[in-house]
Amino acid sequence: MPRWIRPVTRVALYLRDRCACVYCGKEDWTLRGLQLDHVRPRRGRTLARDGVDNAPRNLVTACVPCNRAKADSPPSRLPTTKRLAVRNAVRRVVPRVDARYVLATLNHRG
Image (spheres, rainbow, N blue to C red):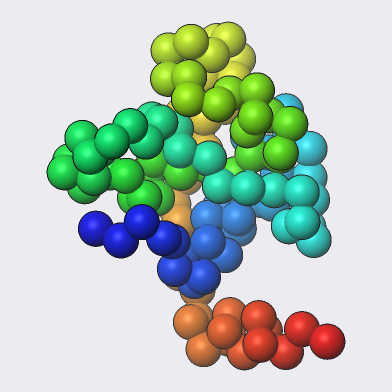
């Protein structure tokens, strides 16, 4: 399983989470202040073998401060409200995104 996340998948995940941090709700439609966070932290090769390392069900959008605060903590160590927000975000359907449109948009930055 690749260690990187395809640009089309990234965009689909940002859209799924409505370009907002799932932990604090801060919206950022420019995507400059958002990162993809692993719900179950990446630790060695165990998750890669399970096939969930970079799977959409293991990724949520997080703002930089929330992502740093969570660090490598498992979901069980999060407060209940944040745990529920993560669960609801992961259950949402990842939208289908036209790869040609996304790549053309990314290449047209200017």
